[in-house]
Length: 427
Ligand code: HSE
Image (cartoon, rainbow, N blue to C red; front, side, top):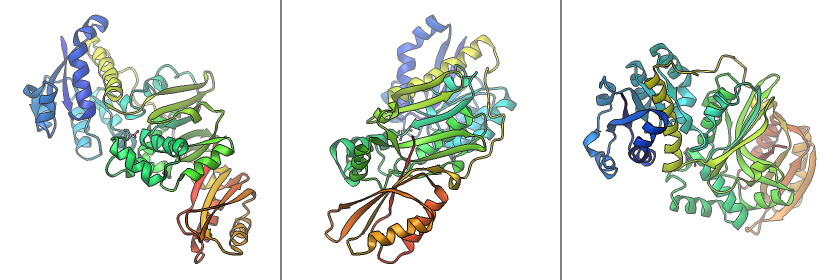
């Protein structure tokens, strides 16, 4: 018996999946006793299906897949929370297993999707939603299941990691490096989801939900991106013995789950500081296993299709053997989200201010007013004749007080020339 598959989305990842099925179908039969058959492909572009040799399976209406009672498993690869939500929920309700790479969907509607899958007695698998080709959801749900996970740290956005690496190694300015990333196809024409941290936020919401057995959604994640980071920040951090990464952070604390995404200073001695370019890595600490790191390519046809097809084969094996899903939703606990205001850490804050007598003293006074103790202050020139960078490194301070400092500085007339750069330290 073959397991019949309906594929929705024939772009980069969908094309990669079609290629893998065509190349390895016989191997899968031999190695795993599972025969997967691509029965239908759906997208807006028949040319894409034809380019991968499956034009004869094409439909532009996903209902042709949902309503086809022969199809056992639907692969959803169009992304987003609109049509994709309808495809995934309707497929599950129709009794079809679903494999998706859709982080936005799982980070916003995961609870609903698991409930529908459970009611229908089918599986939902989403390994490719985080870290591209890196196996991380399956290890968290299987191999590491005996651990209480205390933290998950991720460099889970290749675009921003590439940009930070170029700024650090080559001193390229933010706008320059963004334009280069777009030209190389690493960054979208609208780079918002990547540079403002939302892509990483969806991914850490998914990872934190699994790691801490408690539902974390996109809105729970305090998110700041890399728009205000410039080469001077990377150079200053490097001189202090740190690398700057857009880190997706999940900690289990006594009072709940601390979950956030922001530019972060990581000690150069930590392995995560050496994850460069478009690579991703996820660092997981468990009470039994200790520290583990998962590293690999976070995007692209091959890596993402590898993760999708891993799920497809596992689900197909369950279908072939007639066994129930082994692991469904694991969010059994209801842990609170710790408010970002409670965070206590050290901060790097760079202000661009007018080069005038008394400005430094005035800014320092604002820090003192909010009980933020300074460890060091450095003044560096800018390209503008009348403006300077003031770089403040704080002792351990409370996020709430730092926000009050930034609000006061922003309200002062003729003080901040551009938005401050805030980088939190993760020791
Ligand atoms: N845009 C993502 C990244 C890849 O830059 O890593 C897809 O999740």
